[in-house]
Image (cartoon, rainbow, N blue to C red; front, top):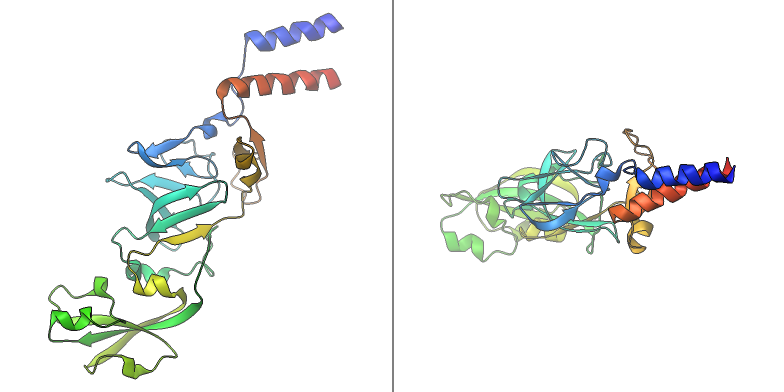
Length: 252
């Protein structure tokens, strides 16, 4: 019986198998720079379809920026991914979050991400006001310059819905729309970096131990996927797989 076990072990050594879902362990970048992309994320056209967690698909833009497309039809560029803290930093491609602000509602969307806000959330109203000179809007603290009309015939301003309307310039103004539960920097600072985090899949433990993380439900689109840790280096993966299989045989 011991010889049979030894023979099986030798077979595993001579014919090492690639660990299941090992393709998902590969890291890719867009254009050779920027954050490394690996599970929980999937880079389109590089990782197999089963690698990413639902809602964690990334792609590369023509300018080699990493693109995160939220379920609410907003495309954001990725500045940084911190796998240990499960945090991703994103910004608007045009450096103007206000362009998509009406659809930016992480609380009501099916997104897997939640915002990390250092400021309180408020409701804001946006106004379209006429003005006569370019310098007029640049000096106003409530002006949204990236929404300017190129001809400067009008300027957009934003106020909290409970603010005094007299804070607007003394010009003809028309309210265009309102948004709910938005952080102040997103409204007033177009270059603002939005910090998002995720709780599922839970890979923090693997990252802190210097290991890779993968889903145990391969080929499944379930958002309840369980995860497991495994070594980062392929030779370690092979040894890890061999050892696991050998111990399984011994216990049989």
